[in-house]
Image (cartoon, rainbow, N blue to C red; front, side, top):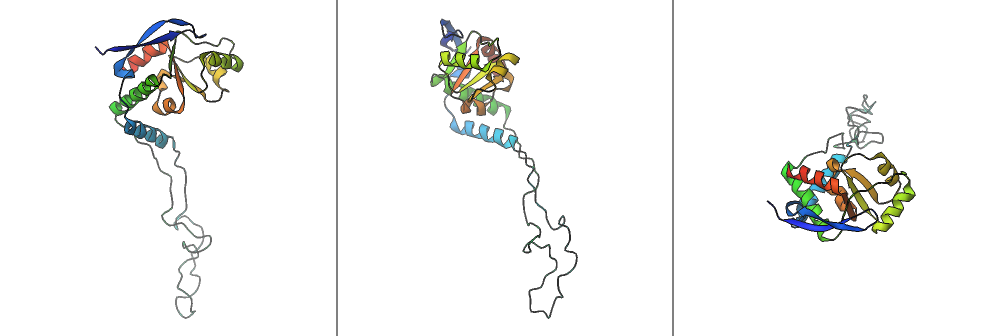
Length: 210
């Protein structure tokens, strides 16, 4: 059984409620920057739409008639006004729609997630709360809660969908709410703090130990 780390457990008003254990297999991994780089590169590649397109000579309308005869004009020979060197002509070797997505092995993706979580823990930017709720669903109440927690840029990780909390956080700059199932390396690195509820921590352990 992996050795556990202990970090403070806070209430939503930042009152100390004790400590909670973090398994070192998830939160005490050494930094592997190249693994993080490869994972983020994969995520960004998978987000590319790949809809950029140009027309080759097969798709440009017109140009069926030879502009002038082959010999005797003193000009360079031309076969079509839709060749690449003509205004309105086709593009040679231009971009066409394609799929940029690819996937790293599941073990590499899981390890990268552990490395990112470990980095947040070492930097003291991991906040574990017993629960987090904004019953009003108002942005101003979310801002007040973040001010108490001293968080300016944060990724809130929830065990399940919470419509009120997500609505309250929607218009707060540098704040994102995500479920455990969707937690990823890019969002972890893009936000200064990671806020986990106790229930989300249990779900995260289940996900990464599966």
